[in-house]
Length: 161
Image 1 (cartoon, rainbow, N blue to C red):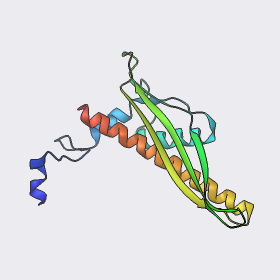
Image 2 (cartoon, helix red, strand yellow):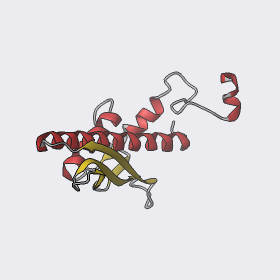
Image 3 (cartoon, rainbow, N blue to C red):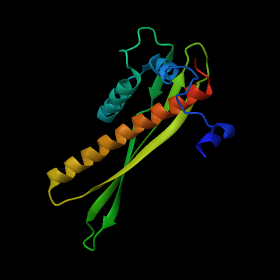
């Protein structure tokens, strides 16, 4: 069955037919300047993207620019007791990112993304606060992963060499 995969057009995401499968994609990601994102969560998202993109340090002369809109947060009570107290909450972080080439007027890629996480609401306010922050941090990591994945797919389909 594995031998039939190439016949259907399947190719690994990082494959380029040569030796180092990730080299063209890694080089393309390393040529992107990441515009600062407002707020604490935006800074954490930018730092996550920097960690994912820049394997050889920040680019000296980036050819593309990635801008991410400010994160929008929505909190929803999931499990409400008979006393009208929430015992579980859902946190949704959403944003839109745009990849631009300074030479072209129109953006190369624009996507809306979101991450949904949940956490327990406990009797201790401190513990609830820690659980909420951990959930928020996990959502930011997921947003960074989604942005990286979307850009890798874009570069793969654009045949970056």
